[in-house]
Amino acid sequence: MKKVAIMQPYFFPYVGYFSLIKHTDQFILFDPVQFIRHGWIERNRVLKQGVGWLYIKVPLQKHERGTPIKDLRIDNNQDWQKTILAQLQTYKKIAPHYVDVLGVVNRALEGNTDSIVQLNKKCLEEVCAYLKIEKSLDIFSEMNLQLAPVKAPDEWALNTCLSLGSVDEYWNPPGGQDFFDPSKYDSAGIRLRFQKIHIGSYDQKREPFEPGLSIIDVLMFNSVDKVNEMLDDFELE
Image 1 (cartoon, rainbow, N blue to C red):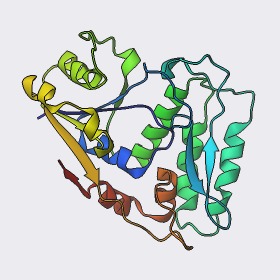
Image 2 (image 1 turned 135 degrees about the vertical axis):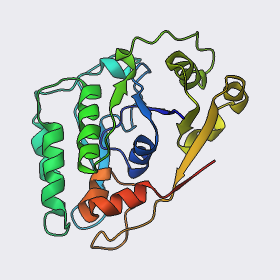
Image 3 (image 1 turned 180 degrees about the vertical axis):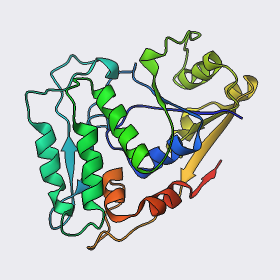
Image 4 (image 1 turned 45 degrees about the horizontal axis):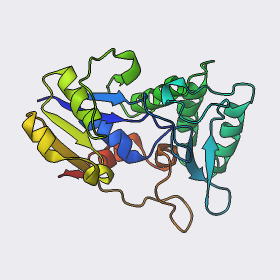
């Protein structure tokens, strides 16, 4: 049985994103759509010194409104890697896995690409390698798929699955449930599944608990085995 998931390429996304990668057979980074500000393409959240959270960000070059994600370019005139690593110093005295996770982040950020899609792919790959998740990630714009015309937003995933061939199930986070018309997938012989991960709290060595942070935060405070237990704790609808 072949299970496929398609998500925009996020920067060090939350734990549920990695659960989707782990439990599907093919994971596609969807990059032909318009970049929307205030999302997760070039930023995410980590703990702030003292209390609360802050954004770690990758600066982007100026671009026209309507620019697709695949055409976004990083502003490497800024020393943004150093800034992000400095922001993670918050974890140095409190996180048991600080040294290992800082190594993961260092490896993810090194290099000289100016493509946010390529950078985010590298970040995802480094986290997966650390968690011993052996999966390859595909970039939609590099796959040269021949898709039927897309007449509604939920047909991007459907037509992609049909173009791939031999896809039995399409998996999506539960947040998009109202976005899809299941009858279209049923008619195509593809089962539409929604993966709801059970995200609990963990010891961040301070109160109150800050939920919904980047995978970086989860890795800082939890062992590889524990994180994989989190990734495996979900239900399908």
